[in-house]
Image 1 (cartoon, rainbow, N blue to C red):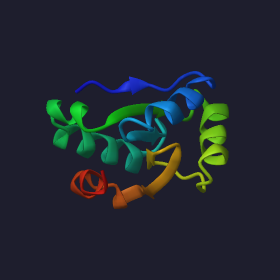
Image 2 (image 1 turned 90 degrees about the vertical axis):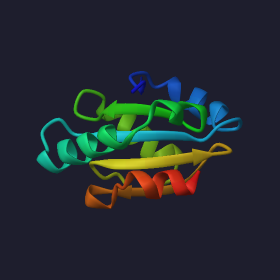
Image 3 (image 1 turned 180 degrees about the horizontal axis):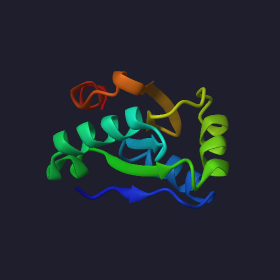
Length: 111
């Protein structure tokens, strides 16, 4: 599983540009939340190596990088939740869900 780490504010602009060519997925994770850990583990178990050809995934530790998490919410006009996935296409959030709503197949169906 090859997820990129979202750990710099300037990456948000890069994500918008990347999403013009390939959908981008952000997984916002709280290391203090058991539901977040469960959702993250479930997503990792289902993730397939060849998914990287279809979608560009990013992992955001929102405890360490709260400022980035807040900027993601503002930039993509989504309400902050944790855990949360945000799917970006063409520079805009086209799908987001949180908690137990985070389902691998549903995400893949949206791309």
